[in-house]
Length: 245
Image (tube, rainbow, N blue to C red):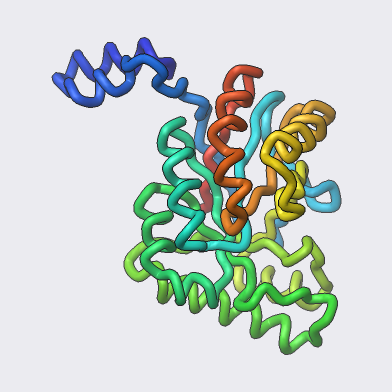
């Protein structure tokens, strides 16, 4: 739906405030395209080249954020996403979600999908099988406690994208699907926003679609995001909202 359609619908139903906001000078163009619902059962795994790709069309992307929630940064990410009327998937660290439960719930209230990213950001290559299972299960439990009445999606992202046969078997057993990455922004490097944006767009230009990795624990990412969203919209990219069933 473009800005004109939003304005017309708002006026038609008497939603004056919403219509004025959508029609205001400088209002962000809607970049969202559709909701993509995927299964997490039967060993489902997605993206990253070594898992089956998400069924995305040309110029469709899924925005994902790892390593939060971060009370000083995540709200800025939410503000940018709200301004462009798009949704992302946040892979939270369980221990951080418990410490910043109000921020975690703010992500959920904004309508974003939330998955898990271990309990302590442990690299599974350094852990035995039992410890890997504990990281998965404890992280999920911690995020659920932090979210309270809000839903946790059965999606998981491996730290440093390093899976193991043991962890994959456990995720299959509990019907949780790992989501890998197609375009890594490497925003964790702490480069100036323009440098990170250029690197991301260069990689995206080669694939023309896919799952984008960002981090809502990085202040430079919060600074980068508004301009990135404007550029994606200007270049015809559509942001797909990922959901599970």
